[in-house]
Image (cartoon, rainbow, N blue to C red; front, side, top):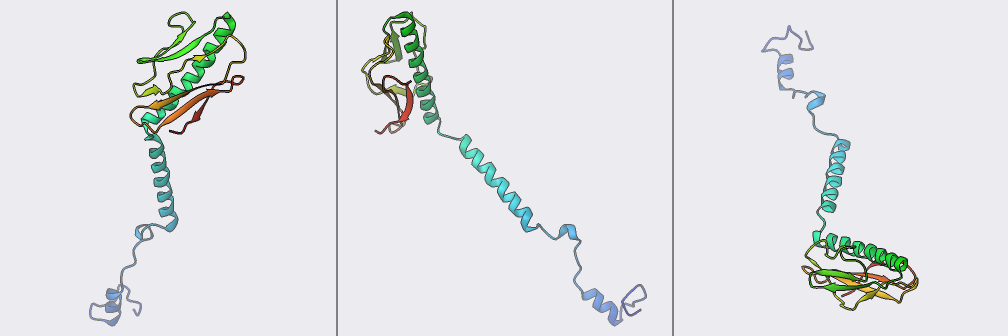
Length: 166
């Protein structure tokens, strides 16, 4: 047979051509397509970004949580001061902070972590008037002194957390 079928003999020309021809690999073992490689690279990129966000600096996160918590505590103390008619004053202490004018242990008195400290030591007066003067507290991370957040109000609006400059 001229096409090198079962009748081809080992010394025939058809047998030698067939023997020298490179074997064609099956379709499933030829490698990956460009689309498959792009999908894998995209999955790895998304996973890497997720890990990078999950590994955010803990001291900055803790400072942000302490600042948001203190702003909420200021608003709570301000509301309690208006309800009772008694002025409430906030002061920073070596161990944390204290609200004067409220019954003891009404509000928390410690930071969430040991890395937060209030930079200014002036008291914050929280009422009982509906409009209080402009007030602010700057919080700082002890381990990273350049990390600062400011909790401030203009006196009429609620306390908000803002970035502060060193």
